[in-house]
Structure formats: structure tokens, C-alpha cells
Length: 365
Image 1 (cartoon, rainbow, N blue to C red):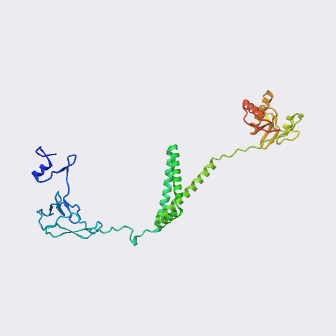
Image 2 (cartoon, one colour; image 1 turned 180 degrees about the vertical axis):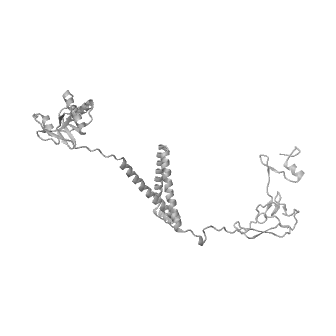
Image 3 (cartoon, rainbow, N blue to C red; image 1 turned 135 degrees about the vertical axis):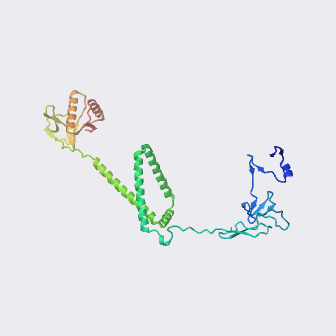
């Protein structure tokens, strides 16, 4: 139902009976829907008002573009599209004349000349204005070096100002991307990679070649500079090792005589001499020096063998004397014991006496 201007409601049929026209079409939102009745009689396309032919809403009433008149028997029937024509027929070319007439109007075709399109000259495409390859190559080298420099500065700034966790995450993503690219490149056949490289090299300009050359040269120079700086930094940070005079090992006559197993075990120590014992001189609190005996020597290590480890006052006093003289000469001592059980006892005694410059190892007799 349609509401008229007078406020009365009537059907579309009653509207047609009263006016002779169909009521205007309305959308669900109440908006009036319109259509373009002007068509081109040649191809049936829409045209602007006043151009082509005007067809009524029913599609049968054709009206001239200049004046509307009732059709006569001599007028041909309106045709919106000639099915005999191929869809691939060529459209009018640029610069041709187009004739627009209304059938039965007796008017002469209206000729409208289309403007000719002239190609715009491209700068640098004339033979006399070709770029100099040497200049282009040098410019590309400069661009490559500039890209390497800006990338390095940006990377250093990001490393210094970004959260270390974020930096590590970004580095991991970059490494993952490189691995993915390598996997993809590995899956690509060699002939395809070679053809791509050949095509890229053949189509590359002098500036592109210069840019690649500059990038490679800049990367190599940057790597050399960084390695040189790292070497200088290590050289500056390296501290000279303090050297000490070799230990002054003395030898004294050992007059201890016994037939028990411990005597043979002590005399079999590495570097031992029959009837003699190696010694280190210990400086006392009053400035005097006293020797401290051991059983053997191996390089910078002095050896003392223990057949049985006991936690007694005399054994503790001997342990402290050996530890102090070793610390005075900046040496490390070694206790050699025959069994793992004796090693455990020795370690327990060292922990009790807070001795750290004497090691223990098991040496069977």
C-alpha cells in the first residue's frame, strides 16, 4: 500500500487507473528508487539525459532526444542490444567520430571529435640524455656504504637502548628468519637459482651493481674494523701475569730409619732422593727461618705422603706448618694417601683446620 499526498491509501492498480502511470518504487526505508531511461541505441549502454534514446518505464515507449513524439508505423522497433553482434567487437578507437542519432527523428548525426592523446615524453629516455654508467655506479657505491653505516648505527643504538630481553628475542627471530630462508633456498633447485641470478645480473643497472658493491665493501670494512677494535680491547684488558721466582727447594739429610711399611711408602714419592728430604724455608714471626720437610717434589708441587691420617695435635701442627710455608712461597701442596678411606679422613681434617692450598689424591703403594 502507498500513502498518497492527500493521506488516502490506495492500491497500485487504483493508482494506475487514476494517473495512467505506475506508482514510484519505494525501498524498505521509504526511499524512492529511480532508473535511467536514456540508452544508446547502438549498444544499449546508459547515456546522459538528452543523448541517445529515451525509453519509458515499460521499455516500449521510445522518445527522441530532441523532442518527444508518438511513434509511427514507419519507426523501427526499439532495439536495446543486437544479439547478432559479437561481444568481442572492437569499440570506437581514439580520434574517430561517433554518430548518435535517434531512429525516426530524421536528424543528422551529431559528430563529436575526441581529443587525441599524445604520449608524455619520459625524461632521460632520449638518446642524448642517457645517464652516465660510471656516475651511476659511483652513486650506487655511495648508497651501499650509506646503507651499511645507517644499519650499523641503528643496530648499536637499539642494542644500547632496548631491553636486553627484547634484543635477545629480536636476535632469535632474525636467526630463525635466516634459517627459514636457507631452508627455502635449499629446497629450490639449483637451475632455478642459477637462472634467477643470471636474470638479475642481466637486468641490473649500473646503480644496482654499484649499490651491491658498496654494501659488500662496507660490510667487509666494518667487520675488519670491529675485529681490530676487539683485538685492541683484549690487548688493553689483558693484564700481565705476575711472575714469581722459582721456589727455593732445599735438601736436608733424613736420618729416620724404620722397617715399617710407611717408611718405604714415603721414600717412593715422586722426586724423592734416598736419605734426603726436600724442604721449604719458613719465615717465623721474629724473622728467623726454619725448614719444613716434605717427601717429594714434582714441578712446582711439593708432595708429602701419609700412610695413615690421624687427627692429633702433632698432626694438626704439621699440617698448619706446611700450609703456611706453601702460602709464603705461593705453591700448592699434595698429600698422597694409600686408600680412599684415608683420603676422606684427610679432607675432613683440612676442612676442620681451614686449609685450602693442599690437595689429596690416592696413590697405592
